[in-house]
Image (cartoon, rainbow, N blue to C red; front, side, top):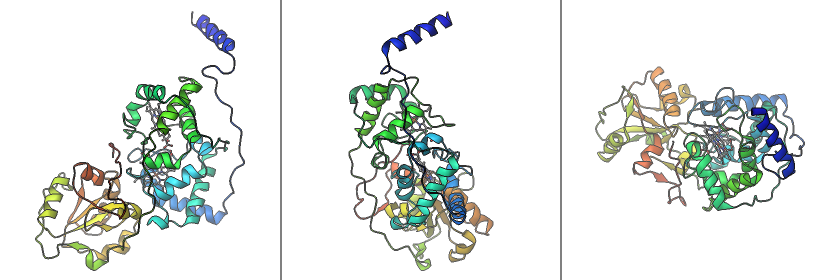
Length: 371
Ligand code: HEC
Ligand code: HEC
């Protein structure tokens, strides 16, 4: 019976001809990008470990913290090099845990370093680039929406906010990626991740329809650059230096809730708040009075600037991985008056507590529900 079915299907397919249903598209190959010198490759590998491995994993496998995607799946590097890699790396995906790493937005990497890391990731992946059209993907948006609700929401969320997977209606995601890149991900999936390709479940037309629906969510203007603020100097680290110590209730000996921290700030308690995210995202929005102290800081080198007798609270967006990573190093350096903000800054914002925003960003950026 099984084989009969198989033959029937085969028949149906051949009758339908090449335009039918599940035939996979054939893509033209594209020349690889430049190779790195040994020196560039060494710097890129070490930048990867320093800046990216916290979330994307030591071996680029992804999903180590949060749901940072794999940075070694072939389909990503077939379709995404350079811009779909370079842009999120440079500018971040606003409203997610992915911050920008380019110096011009307040990040730690030079333009050359971001290009080299893009190409280093490409060469590590072993992928061969394919040629993708620059043209928009046209489709039936209403049909695409129905398909999206049926097939995609468990992981990407009903509003594309990302549950265990990237936020697909995110303005940065949509601004950085062309339609064919998005379509390619849906068709091929991402190897060794929960993202299975849909080429065997959706017709070519339906993949177009879903792509067109996702694209239809691009509306808000994407603001990549904001005017950079001066970084606080050590004499400005302690907020309310004349206030009392907060004496917070710490869950499991280390976590402070947003509610308690906010109350302590309102009561003008003496504290140091450190923002352990990449500094470009501190530039966009941060807790009032916080000091950038990114997770890749050499703690030994800078810890001496911090007072030992004042409570130091760390926070990040992932929601705790980067902050715990830094506060553990503080503890090892003999700083025991520390805490980690339990909900992270996105949790804090979702609860309605205030942040200081960059000029031009007075309107909150969309925040992924899962972070
Ligand atoms: C704090 C965690 C974190 C760190 C550190 C981090 N990322 Fe990410 N990254 C993420 C998350 C989360 C996403 C997906 C965001 C979304 O769309 O919801 C992401 C997405 C990306 C993407 C898009 C991938 C795709 O499938 O389209 C690239 C490329 C990327 N990151 C590169 C980097 C590089 C390079 C570094 C280091 C310079 C880095 N990231 C550091 C969390 C992180
Ligand atoms: C079982 C969970 C799951 C389902 C269902 C799912 N996805 Fe994904 N999707 C993921 C994960 C996880 C990733 C990130 C993979 C990685 O690590 O690179 C992803 C990645 C993607 C990407 C690439 C995002 C980027 O940042 O480059 C697109 C586009 C996408 N999915 C679209 C869809 C669409 C459209 C559907 C429904 C037709 C769908 N997905 C269904 C889990 C899922």
